[in-house]
Length: 306
Ligand code: NAI
Image (cartoon, rainbow, N blue to C red; front, top):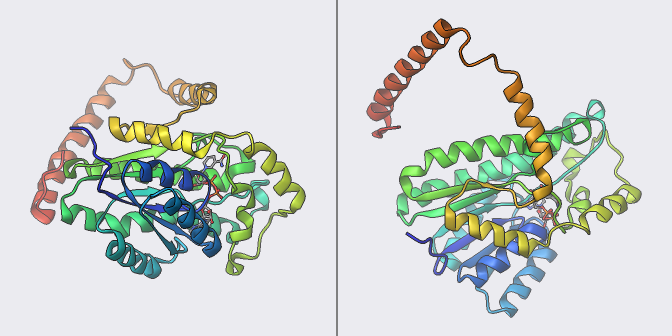
């Protein structure tokens, strides 16, 4: 059955800029009512104004995605204004780069809190509501190509995106019986304002091991100014939703990096016909556990798991 966008409400974190704003426009034009949730109030006001000028039904909420209590309040506010949310876009994200061994705990807490914690809080807030209402829907979380491989300079950022990759894959499995599709967007370069993300870093995470000055921000802008247009990227997201496809990686230049990392993993495996006895023993143990797990889950949670 074709996924119907029209009449749905979409909740987009980081929706006031870059990739999130592109999603707001593209899904708004498809007939979704869109809620923009972003921590920068002026940007939220501007974004909503621009969407409404196009005739898109839009509502803005000022929200820091790391704030769980505020998340629940934002969800209530949006649903009162636009109706039940059945599409989630976990798009808010920040980045910081530099030698990993220089990072402080504040650097970890900020980036993990927004990039991974924000996605978790979004799904924790809305998934139970979506399941209960039985309207189906779709969730798209934004990771990065850096959710597959990384180096020192982007270590924390990538770790947060590896985590987004993992939880999104697991949520796809969890929701498959609920008519709720789940996709992972893993972009390379996007034309956006992420070079400025240091400006949204809260004072409580002020102790950084990195110096992010205007020179660095300007250098980052140079890269992102050459990135994919957010609306073009959101068009790829739309197509993936229609196909209910998990991975959204619309960048041909990603191939060598992905091939290298997957080949590295495959090259670490012994030949398939080695250790046959061990293979058999471990497979039997897993199958036994799987059967026991299904029985326990059915008893405890009233569900039969595959
Ligand atoms: P952007 O900076 O233009 O947009 C991100 C938005 O998130 C901003 O409006 C910002 O105010 C908001 N935000 C930041 N912290 C927040 C918080 N705690 N609570 C609520 N909102 C918050 O950046 P962009 O590039 O559009 O980023 C979107 C996503 O794409 C991010 O998850 C980013 O990691 C990812 N990404 C970006 C790439 C790029 O080349 N720009 C490449 C790969 C992934």
